[in-house]
Amino acid sequence: MKLKRTLVFLFIPLLVTLVAFFVLDGFLELPKAELLAKKYQSAYSQLDLLEKQLDSLDNVLAVAYKNDGSYRSILELDSVPMSIRQAGTGGSEVNLHLHRRDFNGQLTAIAQKIDRLERQLILQGKSYDYISENTRIWIEELKSIPSIMPVSPNDLTMISSVFGTRIDPFTHLLSEHHGYDYVAPFGTKVYATGNGIVTLSNYSRKGYGNEVIIDHNFGFSTRYAHLSEILTEQGDSVKRGQVIGLVGSTGRSTGPHLHYEVRYLNRPVNPYLYYADDLSGDEYEIMVGNLNSEK
Image (cartoon, rainbow, N blue to C red; front, side, top):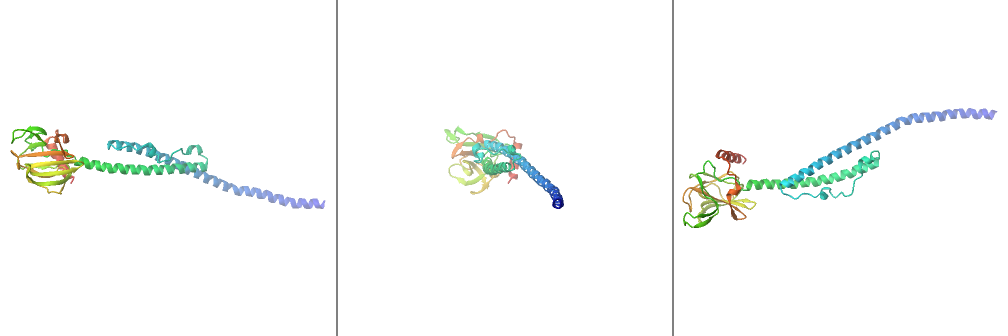
């Protein structure tokens, strides 16, 4: 009986201690579990947000692809194959949305997508750089192609000769005329018809009298002959709409006029093909004024 009382006496405090331990342990662990759950929920929320941002970036990249194709079409550049656009990713990515609660799977999928997008964005950036450089060259070419009349319609009396076969005013025989003859009052301003470099500026012994030749690059050059005065020198850089001389009758000429030629790849071409003839004199003057204001 004494032994039984002694065991009961010892067991009760132990029981109380164990009960207290489990109760308190559960009580203490509860806040930790809740905190950990909140941290996981926050982490998942951040991953969900990152997924949405990556999806948005994918959409932006799709628009960039479409614009890239349009720009290349305008500039007549080869399109970029989709195999190259995919940046060599190949295969398929882990579906982010199938692993919504698989933390490791979700991280793997996000890492894959970030890697792919990074490579595709780098390639798209290089593509835009290429387009930008070709756009610069294209604009420079547009500015260089001889595309305005060399004299203002307001000053033009008549066009006495056009491109092609004509009767030579001196020999009265059929001959090839490689340009246009613009009849205008003595001293009328003569304009450069495109950007370029003056490669010749002197008196010609070939009948052109005072002449200016401009190299426009891209295969084009122009000649301005029979000038009364030359207002530019060899080596000068000139802009479209810049005055380079004055109408005269020097050289093999029957009266004040400008002989104007356009050559492509050193072969004479019809100047009429390279300018609009439907501008009024006032419109022409405004255009030339705007061109001069750009200098």
